[in-house]
Image 1 (cartoon, each protein chain N blue to C red):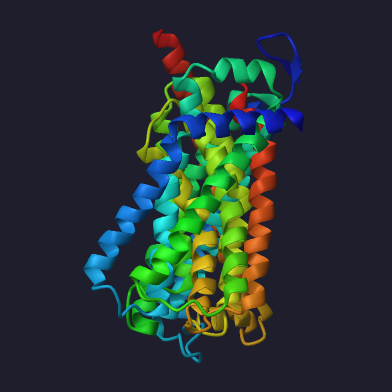
Image 2 (image 1 turned 45 degrees about the vertical axis):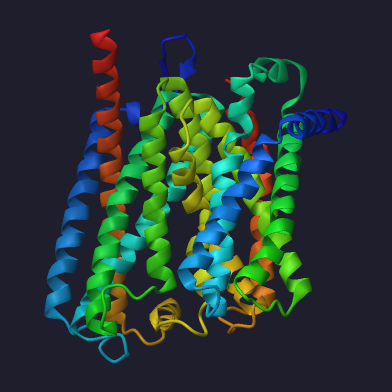
Length: 219
Length: 248
């Protein structure tokens, strides 16, 4: 696990120097949110639509930025070094933790902006935070594995969204339904059921991604 | 038992082309044709199975086709994931051929299931597409297969293609029970009568013996058709591989 901390520290330090991924992430989310606010006139969104917007913005920001997690290793020629020095688990969990930090930062920025720009009232903070956390874990696990997959396949950009979306669909639908409740909307799904699904998805996706990572990482 | 190229003893069920297994395959094919034809004929000469329920009507005859095909498409997805696991463990090209063939067949069955379901929905619920969870998740399965084939297309090296598409299949196989089983159940209270139909069908309490037997025959027929197509897919993939190797 010390290797995992080392991988995480390397990524954090590199990120702190250049701030490339976090800037891309935050700016993408901000631009999309602004465009949405312009088109809806800033208010008058039903809770369901607001929930949909939030998760779509989150998903596509993550798709555009976190897909590069492993590709940047190839580009900076550190991929071979990482394969030789760190065990597979350490690489996976280091990258996973780094992606999770990025997603948490994105949520910290996005939630207040969302409330302000779209005039949403957030009624249940505890539920909201738990949803963001569980959804974030599932999202990050899937993204980390698929990021490694597209880096190994030597393909770019668009394929990542194509691969990720069908896998993340159960997460997206459930998270939207629970968020709808947080924004004061109706109950399309029982809250306890939804958290079971989100939690189960987080566990299954993290375990599956962890177990499958060596097959992607090693030839 | 035979020896493969690197001198190890290997046993592959698909390699057994002796008279007995050929006869078994012919039995399988004939049985599949008989069952599916029989079901098609009977579907029109018996009463619509679900006429008494709200989502019934004449188009509910599609029940005999739509439900088995959806079940087989899910089964083929799971089978593809199993072959993907076998490929990652044994690294035999045949396992990859079978996984891809299973995915191809699953895609076709899924598309037909979606079309028959939409036709049924038009008569029963008034619109082709209702945003019912089951329709949506069947469509998501099609997206999944599409992504799988896009990945295979995009990857250049053969070894990477097989390894990575196997990983994607397994990951999808781990997630898809959520799609097919968990989420439709959760939306039971508010959404369409699809769940009512499914629950009734599952308990089989409102279906007569005749309906049940036709349904079982249909499921069996499509299952045998799937196995038949799977063998065809494997043979085709092997021949493709030989042709590609011969051209080098």
